[in-house]
Image (cartoon, rainbow, N blue to C red; front, side, top):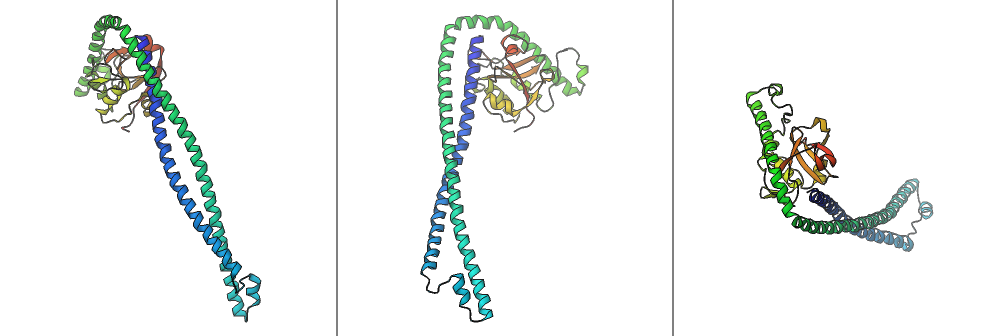
Length: 325
């Protein structure tokens, strides 16, 4: 069972890499499109500016009026004429400088756009490679997982039978805790009046209903990539349950980890997300040191303890969802 859980966890990490690379690739492809358009515009502007400069140079060279500064000044016939000629020279000079500056600016724009395109194409190529590697890893691990599951299907069935009684007990305890919480809400009692269960912790007011929603799906089979009551994987289960509260979460563990704020294990409250095995697995804390989750291939949505076995040894931490983003 631990082997299958580890495989599923590794599969989830591979999917996180794939989804992350896909998101980044979309952003880079958008930037590439913008820079291609910008490069095209800058090149067109450069051609226009160069043509303007060429025309001005030809005009200066071929002008019969000899508009050099010295000629203009020496040709003045009066003080007023001299002032007017000086203003004309300054105006023409400023226009010439502006034309040259345009050419330089557009050349610089082209250089910047070309460098950006080269850099983004390199990043695009690497991300495509990352996605290909992640996809190949997913395919390979799915095959390994299916072969392993087939080889130990009988053992899994026996273990499931052994765990059924334990699961029923855990489920009864969890439902009792949740019923106590609902009674508290209905009667406006304090948490201290409950007293009957020392492991009970009141869910935070914002997402207290998450636990009740999650427990409606106990027994739903694990399906890799599943995110509906016909079958869940771990992050699909969390995503679906929170969606019933109007909270949108992504369908992979790495992004779900980033969606919340850190919570110490000693401060866990029902509704918090708990993560395992390098963010390869996620569940929903329900109180009493227990969490509900979609474990792995061949299993069903069920309740487990944070302090036992694989989950205790691979615990990464917890996150609290604090907004509906």
